[in-house]
Image 1: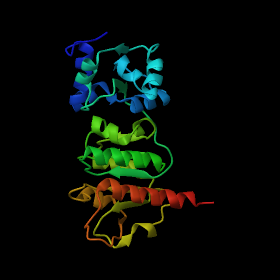
Image 2: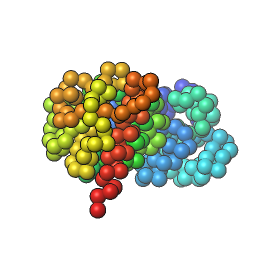
Image 3: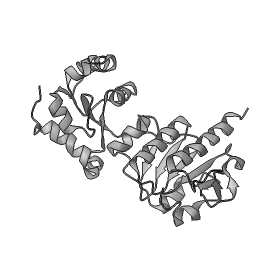
Length: 260
């Protein structure tokens, strides 16, 4: 059993936790917690490296079920709770932390979602979770977004990385090429006059959600064919990016679901 916090496996996981450069270099992501790791296994992913604390996992039914899977898997090492905690990103780890390869999923039919300068990891992860639930065919993170594989993004996305096609940090010229097949490119803009529910989401389209603080960037506005707003009756000037994006995504799903 691994007990030292300076063990090479612990140090490797910690480097993935702390460094976007390391994550990009290895094309690895760091997952922790019973639910996220179990979901990765359910999606067919297998860890490049996994540390688990048997006693912690045995303490809950879900943890015990995961432990039974880990016992015959390669690259899975028992460790003390202290060693697991040294590699984890949360204050109260659940006894399992693992490195997985970045999923490589091809774009599929459906709405294209462009995230433009979404810097808050919680908002970015929540948008990915909503995009997966709404059947988005591709998410593209434009320049200025938080790291798609930041541990906070992964926790907020709740496993969406394993079933949602993702592209990260293209330049705007490449992004124009990504959206060439989408004649409708909507941008969410609090200053727009057209309500989001009057747009036609039933055909090939893309949606751009801009920065929490600054709204859509100039390149995003130039790419858009229509600007949409969410009518509001309270005193708030705007909604946060995750809430606003989710409202638009599920309007798109509602309209597409009504097609006979």
